[in-house]
Image (cartoon, rainbow, N blue to C red; front, side, top):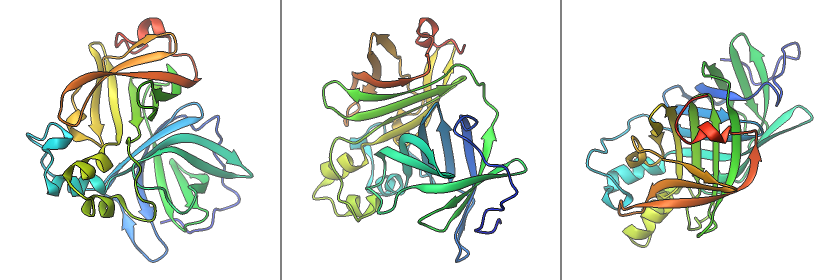
Length: 275
């Protein structure tokens, strides 16, 4: 494990070289605690990023095809997940992952860290919280590369999407507010009723693949979304994508594009061709 002080002689990443899919192999704390088993993927697009973090011990979700079908046990595992989406900025050698969307309630501290390279590992050291993370760039195609902030036309919910090569990530905030100063697990456990607990969990951060037959979710903070097709289409500044309500009924979600980074090559973007 690396020390908590960044060696001055090592090279430093930049916003220009950061785009890619990064997988975390280690989270280490000064008191000796370590996490090497959680699934953590961070997709960095041009400026905007999405991040999904899932603990080990995933339960069996067979037959639980919507929020309303979840059991108390599976709900508590879902509440232990983390994930965010927003913009990565750099100032005076510190990188800040600003969060437009956060799966957990709002954190007390900003997400700021210093990055440097050790061999084939990118090391992250926290500024306000003393942690070390090890990141590895995954081999995926580099083009097309684009990202966008979104807003649901009907509900006003924030969203985000990024694509690099044949991989994409998409995020959507929950509709309700969650109490600050608590974990999501505490919010779910203390919810007034099951419907409120489901609302607390209704935040999507998904990763998937663009194939010759469509855009398919492979891993998600809402496991019943896995295997589903987004079936995206675009008209002007509007994305239409397939979603489902809490009871599992499909509907078309209409996103307004509020901030587009890069050119999606829209003549082939929506038919699934990974160009």
